[in-house]
Length: 177
Image (tube, rainbow, N blue to C red; front, top):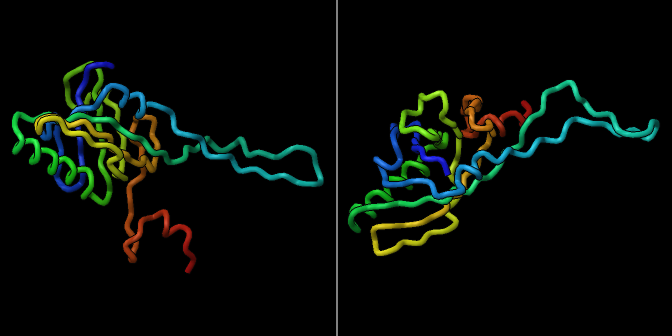
């Protein structure tokens, strides 16, 4: 796996290097999970009984479906008290922001998220599917996220807008007044 750093950003003021803030780093294979292309949405099509085959709209660009990613991680601490403190702070950072988090991964370099080589993923927490703690200073766990707007690592998700009922734009679009 390439050497690099993982940065976290959420809208509640958490912003920084995951290892420095929480002692958290990605396990081998996590980058492969992030870089796996998302599934494509089915194109708009129409089948008529009056003509052979199927009409498919090929003029609109391909759109990607949301996807779930499971990221295996490690948490390292010098003692048990620091371990608990870092674990609680990390879980709060990834679960408490309604907008989710943005993970930046800077491969091959030890630089900042503004680096042009950094990958950017907008994720929302779903669950922690696995957790194993060893002697109170090391933990291995897997966190499951949903990437609602797959971006192939370039982070082009649209801005979220909140409706009057506290629901986001996806539920708002389906309702009629």
